[in-house]
Image 1 (cartoon, each protein chain N blue to C red):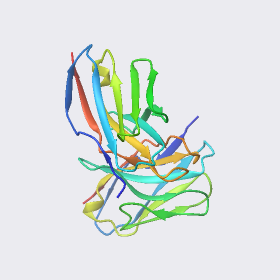
Image 2: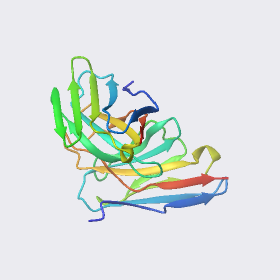
Image 3: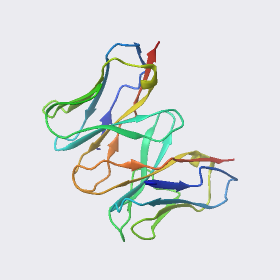
Length: 113
Length: 112
């Protein structure tokens, strides 16, 4: 059972380049999330999708866009990468019911130079 | 502002001792609480969840919840060097499928 799968695991971008981080879950979860994690800052929510067809901004959405392609897949796009977007990005999913936990992908380590 | 607060640590305990990790949250109506463990360079993994006041035990781990004080804790008994990690407290503050709010984590170091 794969759980939550993110691609790529590592990426180096030049300032101004664009890229899409992919996330897929095979647990039939309704809700999916993108977080970034920086030293001393904890996990900060970028965007989330409570259910297929909906997306909402989180705490730090600027510079990012998302697409909930279907129930399984939720992608995060950086249109014009900036050094401030150097971070570790985690995708997570939850069934979406009241007392359910989040499951995380293995993370994408992104460096913008 | 929905907040979850944790002491960043590092918390150092000797092998075999009890490690006590604490978390406070701002929203009184919060209903579900989770503890995640994150090893360096890895993703967070769930170790405990708790929904009702009191204690919940799972092996060497005990989660404690006090909703009146807006406080949740994690006790690790017989701490092992392999328990050395960052522990994240997460709270479902608004219920339903709203995102979990995470604390910044407490780094635990178990000294052999």
